[in-house]
Length: 404
Image 1: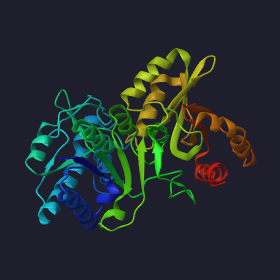
Image 2: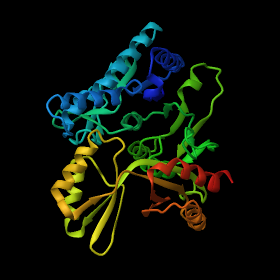
Image 3: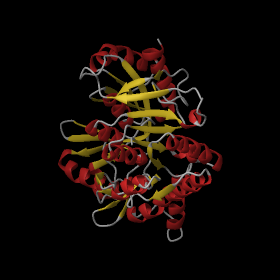
Image 4: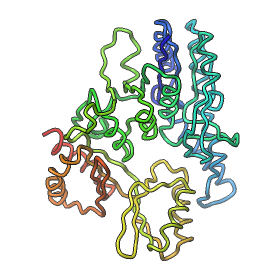
């Protein structure tokens, strides 16, 4: 029997009505003779609310910003997905569907020891397979696992995507369906860009580049798993699919058929709350070690004669203020940070980006935008700009490069 893995994000699980819609979809797949594995995120903004509670607990003993224990954060926020998995199982039982819930550790998600930003090292899906063979739908808590030392860990923002793709790879699933509040992949965030283009298909290297610079699509580590293990990913909107006869759009993600990415502009992506750190070259190794300990991996880094600069995303850091203050105190005058800024990235084939590079910077100059830095990746060019103008610039560049 074919295995189907479905993942439902927090927006798809945010209230009882939506959980009911998810249960209907899962039950429909179960009734057409799939072995179904479902990965769920925490309900709505539950993870943010739990982190806010952690800050409140910390303030009972201090009137200033303090470091939050990453281990205890993992113990706290991992409960959000457990609530979701149990509620979905109860809803499935009410529909006559035999279902069982498993935590990340029970499902065999083995991770590194890096609390709050662990990586999946291997999957040991013995209990998942056992339950599937007994005719049950298996509902797995996403975003979490267990280290080799037996510690509960979480996988960083978007980690439920990684859980789903890793399980799909290990189980040899026919496909991995990623459900969210958007019907696939767009050329820009539909909540920001006025007329985004919907991509019915997209190449995994492009999708990974988008994810790494802030696009709210599929988690970058999930895409790494998909590329390494040849997992077939389909991105869909959850609310479009709760009726069997519903018309819907989707995005199918795969490796380039010719081995090379097509030469076109795919997306303009914005990433708020990015700081640039500038450190004396002699202190770079020490800084890199410390920001890794704080789970602040640099997005880009580049050097001048005596200094090295790096871009650090702060958006989902639970104690970003404390981390930056601590680093400033430790490195004193050898380290400086900019205020939080915005990163704007143009994603596409290398040749096509080079062709449009002059147009991009001409438009920035016309709008009196002075980039603090310009960096790049295999399929992108990125520039750091004033945070207050980030959405305006994203719309302007999207109109120039895609809508035209």
